[in-house]
Image (cartoon, rainbow, N blue to C red; front, side, top):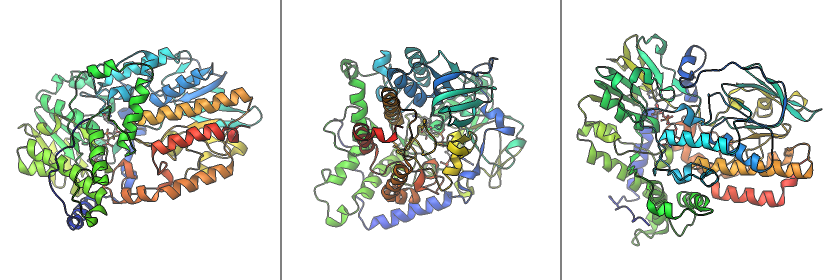
Length: 598
Ligand code: NDP
């Protein structure tokens, strides 16, 4: 077990007032009234930002047949569902994806420096089934993408695949108890079951910057990296940028990994930052011998569950992963139980969660001071919000980049981001930065499958549109299915579970869906559908358990975790957390599965 980090400062409860005020000021500096509508889709006039640079689109005839199950999305959610449905005995599975192969976010994202910062042994699913042990503690993107392909091969998911295909409509046919599925490739076929797993981190988003279309230089989004322009590959060596002035917009988990490579190659790099990320120690290395020695039946599930218990503050008597995710959670847990400091006063005890949060954030801010030599730049890089307000990041290269003479950090927070773009550059306030190339590391539409954005219309029983049924917000049982929309399943965190290792959540979801479908098969049920009462009851539970998360999210700096500062409880996951939720699902499968079978 790793030792607790040293406690840098002792913050008194009375100091919390000033700290909260500092966090509030930073939040207000960043908040924008246009919330999530500040972004624009990489579609229409901006469709070239989303074009597939990796695989040629092949001609094919439209499908007009009938299959047992359709899975929309070929990322980890879809692959896990396909694999589990196969294990449950489903023969005809048609996988559909807008990309040219499996991988989802790992198909699209191939930028230099790409790695997963969650340990590969718990992030890359189905290792035992595929017979693979990751080479690195934090796997490079290409190793993960190849693993996606290996899963598809292992479970025979290539057999009936439609790539470069976007589903454009799902319509329930009551008489035949099946879905009519249409697509942008002219397909019009039937499926008994439909699983939608297309809502996570694939659709790039761009900031709605005035004048973005006027820029005459080169530009692309990090999830469609243009190696033809930059040269090099996912390990770096971007020789095409020699002599070029480059702007990168965004300092989230992607920006943090890309920026060191851009800085090495470009003549000048401007980093446009709005909110600084927390950047903790990375410490990547080849997979430990102790991990290799632990490989035996059940080893991956044991590690996944142990990580989940440790990072959610549940009880675990050991820490099998032992990285910065778990040590941070452990420090916070130790403070909350008083085992870090036995001299805490009663007053301090009332605020231990905030004090523990402060210690972590203080450690993150101290690391910046220790690495970045220019004091003003170091101050600009410091994050002022609570630890889980934004996705934490990890790097042993990023902060050092700001000591290079060819790198300029441009703080855009006071302007709500970049002010505008011109034919030749990027403007913040009154200052224009002339550049040859602008790279957008501005993220994705998160948790918004086509169902919620309206690009995938779903029509259920009696011609009811799903968005009509959800007019007052999504209504589901356990996030999976809705009354009036039989045999249709959703994957994602909405009214379900969320966790740092989201692949673990997807695995539980796929297991659940396959169990319900398998049971329907055994009992000869024609359709799977929750009652209106069960759906209503679940919505009530989501609301009842939301207040703590809602209060936390409302005070957070804006980002996609909190709907850009406008959190909506109806979009939340189950308040007591993923460990409790997975237990609830297990019990439900044992006791109540018949309530959704007709
Ligand atoms: P994010 O949404 O996290 O970050 C987008 C960045 O763009 C933010 O820094 C944002 O600033 C900035 N931005 C947006 N609009 C503007 C604007 N108008 N002007 C200036 N800056 C702007 O996207 P990422 O691609 O970095 O990450 C998305 C997710 O992908 C992560 O949260 C993570 O879940 C996943 N990921 C995981 C990795 C891993 O290792 N496991 C690696 C990479 C990504 P602001 O913060 O102020 O909104």
